[in-house]
Length: 545
Image (tube, rainbow, N blue to C red):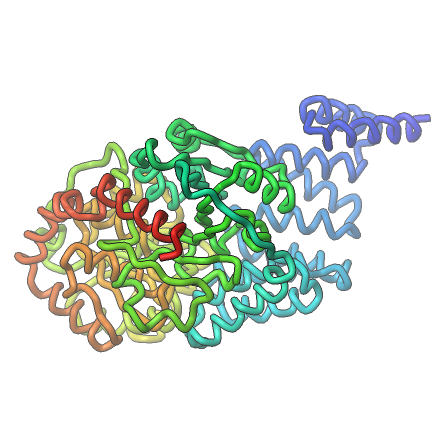
């Protein structure tokens, strides 16, 4: 009788869960566990509810209980791996994914992709790409996995831009060309402009799209924002207030979203995500708007034949260099592709810390996954040539800190010259700039928001450019500021520039003192001018010029 009651309650609870009635579903799951304390399905589904609420610890405990009572369901291990991965407990997450793989090897593409994402986070790019290729061999029709694979290619130091471009074009053959169709526009009326993004929230993209939304000319443009996520925060609220038309699209399929965009008669549709997480490039593949543009979120080609243009600038993409590796026509904005939003209340710029300490402290503020071994080797060589210099790292997970110290130790740099910090709050992130004299950019995946934040805090960034657009984003920012002497074109030059700047503390101090004002007075923060240039570019695209 108890089993029959529990089964009936489970059917009712699961229906409520699927309908989004989480409190009612939770109450029934707990009733079931009162009848059957070892009911693994109720434990697992209750764990999913706690995960949705952000209660990571409770979710992990429930998943572990479910696995303890029934360890043969790959979904239990996959979900546990997902939450551990989000918490940067990568070794444990990998073990969970491996367990899921063993239980369902024929259905292993999601687990392989998850393992690939972990390897990428650890900076093991070749291993990550190998796992992604295994996943795609099993599930060649999964656009999300293919996008994650393409995104990871941008971290590779072993593939040429031409090889990376070939892989992006393969995406178009699979997901683009079969879905493409023609659309028309009515340029005689106000231009209908649509922005599509999963990142209208507390995300790096918001730093650059918010000032544009605030300055669009309502007499010339009718703006719609298509938001691809369900989660909202204070940034979402601000962006929504700036958008004449706000369309929540998380529940829409690709076909439904494409139909909605067509019904809205959008003239210029702008992708702000590229191949980053939660993108909807398959919608663009359906060509729901006559002019389609990619910008901001992904500094590379999408590979889509249906994507007409990519917005950039002459520093990130010097004329004649990048065209052959793009399916889109490159449109270079006059000053820069970046328009940085004032970050709000922040502490004042501090004095140069090296004046008190007598030795320069370099800083690494980019994501850990961007720190290639190729780059770390260059940093180590520079440290050995700058007396007393140290490096402060931010965003290095606890379990990776020893590996990073070992990399430097193998190159002769002692641990006393390295300072490790894990993920920190935004306030702490800014505060740590008070202890850094020179920031070091990532390579080959260069920074953008991170570089702007450092500049705002008075810390100049030393960068190494490469052969790809994505390696030149910080170079673009620095050239716009007239700071060409912080841009290196080869490892030896990077080291020499680091030594030169570290050896002139008075000049470095003067630069630090005026860097915030320099940034504010530059085209990077002139939102009105930037938006006019952007609008002119959209108008020219629509006219076919």
